[in-house]
Length: 221
Image 1 (cartoon, helix red, strand yellow):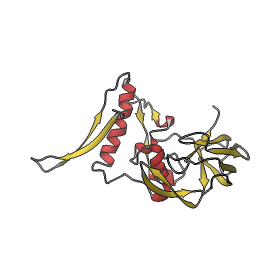
Image 2 (cartoon, rainbow, N blue to C red):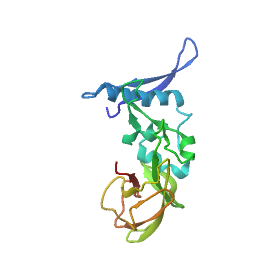
Image 3 (cartoon, rainbow, N blue to C red):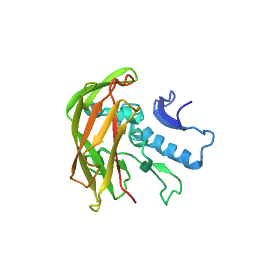
Image 4 (cartoon, helix red, strand yellow):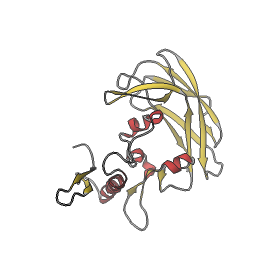
C-alpha cells in the first residue's frame, strides 16, 4: 500500500442516500500528527468532492499542477509543500492546508488558511506544450526548446504583505537531473521584479517527454 488514506462514496441501498466517507491508514512508525494531517486532507476532499466530479480537476493550461502534485483535488494541490502543515492552537495536532481558487486569483497563498506573509515567482510562458502523465498526453502552458537549444524566459516575483524584503529564487528539474542546464541573470529580488531564467536542453526526458521545472522562493529567517 502506497498511500496514507483515501475517500470515496457509496449508495445506501435501504435509504437511497449517497454516503461519502474517508479512510485513514495506521501506517507503521506514524505519529498522531501524521494521522491528523492525513485525516484533514481526506475529510476536506470527502466534503468538497464526494462523488469524484465536484472540486476536482485543473484548467488545461495549468494541468502540470496535477502532474507535480500527484492529484487534482483541493488537498492534493497543497500536499507537497512543508508550509502546508501546521498545528492550530485550538486543535493541538497537525493538519494540512488545502487549495483555494479565490486566494490564488488574489495573488495570495493558495493553500489556506494562509499565513500573513506570502511571496512567490511565476514563469511567464505562453507556448502550448504537451507531456506524458501516466502514459496519457496532457497539454498546457510552457516553453518549447529543442534538444541542444537554449531559451531565456521571464520570471515575475510577486507577494502579499512581504514587507519589501528580498528573497532568493532557485530552479531545478522536477523529476530528474542532468537533462537541463539552468542559470539566472540574478537570483534575488522583491515583489514586482522580473528575473531571467536561461534554459538549455541537454537531453530528452523520456518519462514525461518533457521536463517540468520547479521554481522555489526562499527568504532567510
